[in-house]
Image (cartoon, rainbow over all chains, first blue to last red; front, side):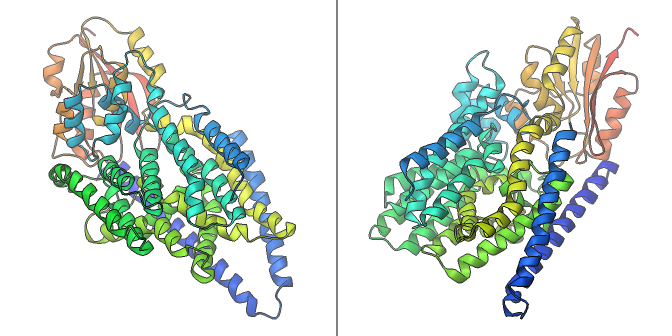
Length: 72
Length: 481
C-alpha cells in the first residue's frame, strides 16, 4: 500500500465516523424532541431549546458566508 | 393543485439555475471519458463502453454531438440539463398522482428546482440526469396505466445504468402495490423491458467479471449515510464547516420526514416511501450480498421522492414563528449550498480533471517541437488530456502489475485507440518526451516506482496539483540535454 492510499483510507474512515456520529447525534436530537412531549417543562423548554439552536444555526450561517467569501 | 403560473415560474427558475455557468467549469475525468467516447466511431464507442462498467444508451444519445467538429466540450452537458428540466416539468404530475397537499407540493417542487444535487448532475456530461428522468417517466407510466410508456422507460433505464435494474424492480413493486385495473398490462410491459434488455446481460456479466476486485467503491454504514447526505447537497457544502453542520441538520430533517411518513401516514405514504427509499434499500442489500454498489449519483432517481418526504413536515408548519425556526435551520444550507455550488464547482471539477486543461494544453502547444511525444502515467491523465491533444503523438504506460483499482480495462483502452507502450520504446523514437504523471492513492507502489525511475532524468515544467492525496505534474525529458 502506498502512503497516499494510507492517507485516503484514513480520510474515508474519518468521514465514516463523522457521518455515523452526526447521524446518531441527529437521532438523539429527534428522539429527545419526541420524548419532551411527556415532560412537564414542555412547551417552554422546547421553545428555549429552539431559540438556542436557531441562534447557533444563524451563527453557522454567518460563518459559512465568511468562508464562502474568503476561500478561493 | 398548484396554479399554472406557480408551476411555470418554478420550472423557469430551475431551468435558469441548470443552465447558469454550465460552460464555466472544465471537464473532469468522467466527463472527459464521455467526451472521448462521443468522438469515437460508433462501433468503437460501443466496444469502449462494453469494456467499461455502463450500458450504452447515454453514450448513444450524446454520440451525434461528439461528431460535430469544433463543438466546445461543455456542450456535451446540455443534454443533461435538458433531461433535468424535463424531470422538473414532470414533477407536478407525479405530485398530483401522489395526492400531495398544495403547500407540500410547492415546497417539494422548489426543492427539486434548487437542490445542488440536481444542479450538479444537470451540468454534468454523464448519464445521471437521464436516469432520473427515466425513473420519473416510469413512475408516471405506472400511475397513468400506460404500458407502452412504461416499457420504453424501463428498457431505457436498463440500458442507461446498471442501477436501472433496481429502478425497474421498484417500478415492479409499485405496480403490484397500486393493483390498478391494468396491472397485467403493466407487468407485461416490465417483462417486455426485461426481455429487451437480455441481449445486454452477457455483456454486463463480462463487465462484472472484469471489474471484480478492481472496482473502487467502499461499503460501510458511514458511506451509506454520507451518500444520503450527498443526495441533497452533492459537493456544494464539502468544506468541513458546511459538511458537519449541514450533516446534522440534514439527518435530523430526514429522520423527522421518515417519522412523519410512518406515523402520520399521509395519502400515498407507502408509495412515497417505496419510491424514496426502495432503490437505496435494494442497493444496500445488493452491497451486502453481491458486490459493493452504493453510490450517491446513480441514486439520483429517488431524490424527487426523498425531497417530497422532506417537504411534508415543512408543509405542516402553520405559525410564522415556526417558519422562522425552520428558516434558521434550513436557509443557511440553501444559501451557502447554492453559493457554494457556483463558487466551488469549477475548482472541484478542475481538480478532478487534473488541473486547468486549457492552460496546460496551451502551455504544451506553445512549447511543442517536431519530434516530441506525450507519455501518460495512467488512465487518469490520459483521459483528462487526450481529448484536447488528439493531434499529437500520445502514449499510455502499460500497467506494471495486474490491473490497478479504478483503471480502465484493456478492452476499453483498445477501443479508445490508446497506444500502450513501455517508456523505453517511446524514448527510442522521439527527441523529447512530455511526461504527464499523476500520483493518486489507488496507484500501486510499482507504478509509483516505475514512474519515479522515468522522471528521474527529466525536468519538471508544470505542476498540476500538489495536494495531500494527489500529486500531478508534467516533466520534460530532452534527450539532447
